[in-house]
Image (cartoon, rainbow over all chains, first blue to last red; front, side):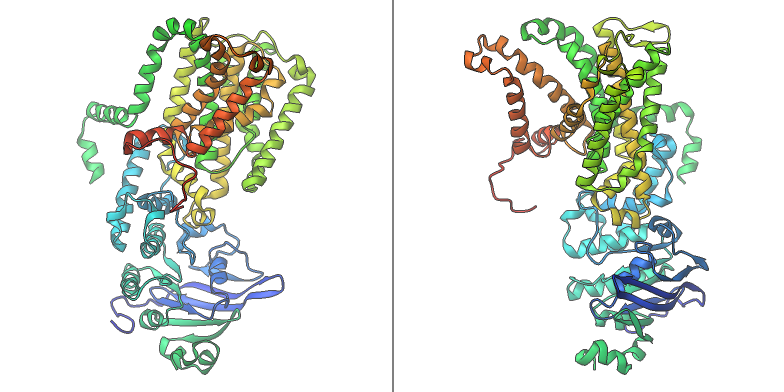
Length: 266
Length: 363
């Protein structure tokens, strides 16, 4: 498969709109005046050299950091200032660059944590094991297995997450994030540490996610993957946007070639 | 589809199904309940030759089980180390004692108030949960010290160093519980209910959320778990269980004074959780049992062995040394606790002891 697959037509709705995001850490601007728009149904890649501010940008979008300036509209609603779990509940999920699973919980339990905000049983109902809590639990188990099936981990459901091989841990992160039923999925270097075969599989999984109607934002160093699957690419360097456009446009942008890609694709 | 099927099933079948499900789910608990139910019959003749009043000690084990299971939820499951559980235990004990002795409340209401007041004070000090790891441990340690000073110095309310005497015994509306055996059953019925509820909680959505935030707060939050809120709720639950245990303790003892609720109590509660096994409901029972029985066994040792050598006896605190030694050895050879160690024997036919001197291959 090359180029963007046409099986899902990108809508024209602006799902996420960041404007003028700025974050400085002790005088060093990690993200500087970054504005971009993500339309529904697209795969948007954010690339840039190490330390360009990609992960900081994710942390701003998910409420882990508060920006010094700027705002983010998600479906027309401001999300800056909300707690991370509230943002997740609104429909923005993410994975982590350094794997952040719950290693001493089973694979299935990891995904079930992702279903947390979609279920309601509190302390009282859970401890008394009310029928409603029991039904919820059964639903969660079913739903968790469905998500594991999607990334091909259903056989590992009962194993400890920490015992999985590295590539599968990455996939589990994706399944767990999908379990939150997001409208946008932020993937943070999902292909790092994967071999060529696993990376190709990952590409298929990302297409699958997009075809489910989930918009994907992808921070990635693997240029092959980025150029192959993304609809739009945003290039950051030293916290600033230096180029934005389709993969072909970005590839030929002299600023990008100078700052980052160099001879790699030149 | 699930809903439709349930609607056609008559209620008694549903109830029956639910009942068998409950039994299957709580098999260990039921076995333990039966063990406790018949305990007074075999424990009585055994007590005299052992030199330990088993029923008397088991009542206390029940009380400490309640406090330890609360602490285990907070510390073992949610990973928030608290050296202040003794404070809530004391708050519960004093609340119930003061209300029953000075305000004439019935005992059951006193104990309920103990639960409520402890939980509310837990909520009041919940901001310390922003701290992490050692800092939280230090802050909760401070909490224990404040509570201790409060019990000792607020003489008009707490009776100061004298404490509070002639606290009425355990009673339900209409029924007084007078005998040791009655107290034993009273405490353990409550403890078993608490164990069942906590076991359910640990396996539920809430239990998963607190285990998740233990292992990675950032990831738990990003998965939609309200980390700060969950911590506060579990801290309140832990405080409430500490208060319940304290309330029961006050009525079992009949008198309380500040020294019972010093920092030593908090430390032995933490020890119960760690020795019994973190992240394990049964760990609380095992830990409470071991930590409560050990000193009594050490005390009774001279009786079993006949004479203790003079040079040992002259060293008046040798019980403490043996006690400490056993704890150290447990921690070295069964670092994940007694329950984990023993369940490994059953499940994997493996020795419960690990060799701490072997090189670790995998962490």
